[in-house]
Image (tube, rainbow, N blue to C red; front, side, top):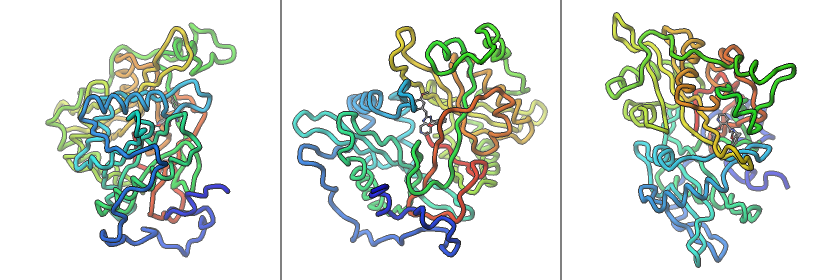
Length: 389
Ligand SMILES: COc1cccc(CC(=N)NC(=O)c2cccnc2OC2CCNCC2)c1
């Protein structure tokens, strides 16, 4: 039976789509903490739960290796996300995080880590309501343990531990359709190193195109063009928070970032997150901001290249510089940093620059979901102001 698990969960159901009599907001009321299941869900006998302390280098390495060998692959199984250890520490240690939400499953006898799921707390605004949610991510079951129905029990366990912290909603994405997307985004890629992308099969040489013509098509200037364009620093946090909060206020669903959140999520961290501001030369105010995160992919089965170095568009705000120019500068710095490709979703105002900056459409979609929160109408991607890692 399709979606046996998700039809048992407090999520929007396909049959309810179009039923405007259902109110927008939480689907189930919180339960008293005393009534939340106190003990972990049962696992098959030979497995046990483990709380993963990402601060421990040994545990972080185990999590890194599980994901590097078993996490999400593209539709043609040519690439697999290869999140770095530093990225995982950044992604899992935002302000207010709970170690208990970093959940592993290991084999009792060998102590081998065979599954993982995480949550981090985030304040998300949905229209005029600010809701503290768990952003659930990194659900991974070892390839050898698939179709044992482990994922539903992992989802129930992270939900139970989130409930224990008196949080009743969650946000997550998936490449598959389950009940029920709040929006479905297309992803786009901008070639920075077309020769490598074609060699590894990420891109194909266009019809009537030669390699040299293709390299010329994607060539970028050596340096950025926006006056006052520079790396973000700690002293920019208040100004970036101000323009980012104002910019995100226009979207139906968006994070409610504090300065503390901006300091964690947007201050540059080498090899993890890059962020730039445009500072006006006369007024010294911060007028614009752009950022992208580093998420390489392992290349499966190419003898000359092991890794695809990919940048993922994060949050970008324009109050003075045209978005087209700011994003072209983001492409230029990504090329300077030897990224092979720059990826973006068609969320926020991204659709205004994708085609013009020579992004090509990806071959899949990324669907966004809320747990225990009904949105009356499916959103357009341009109404979404939330980027998950
Ligand atoms: C190129 O290597 C890949 C390795 C694994 C999967 C994919 C395709 C894919 N599924 N891409 C995305 O989900 C994607 C495309 C553009 C922007 N963000 C994305 O996903 C982010 C956000 C959700 N969590 C994964 C990273 C590509």
